Length: 170
Image 1 (cartoon, rainbow, N blue to C red):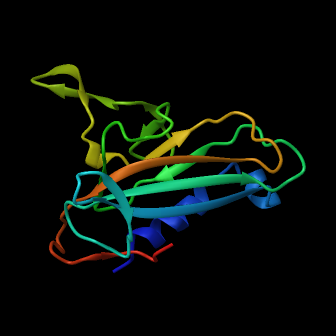
Image 2: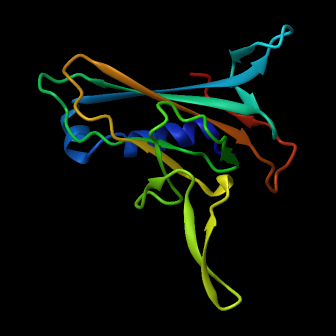
Image 3: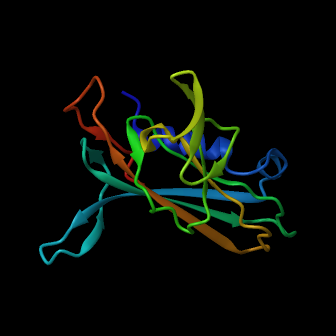
């Protein structure tokens, strides 16, 4: 089974920045994944994300660093949401993220879609488990500077329910 973290890292590398920046090597990306756990005193801690089971919450942080000598403009910081997970509402940081169910059309949260019910067009809220990408538009990124974006996902059961989801441990 392909791991969530590896799949996310590959998708992140492909969607990290506009093609011109990716080809020039001006934007370096780093992805971290941590399992969100509760300490005995009730406080949240971030632990090892080597394996996750349905119901576990994973926090992904994508960091973009300008390794070039010129400012990077029009950066589109994209965080893919792995299959078998659902976005946890209101966890995108910074909060101005846009979301999408595909890699092309992004909209403000919560996403809605037009459907026809009983012959009438209506707007309905897209379920969080259908979100596949979050994107931020941070503006200009100066040489040598970094910017980070994070969001949480909850592991959901699929046809392989009960099987642990393994990560690379980065």
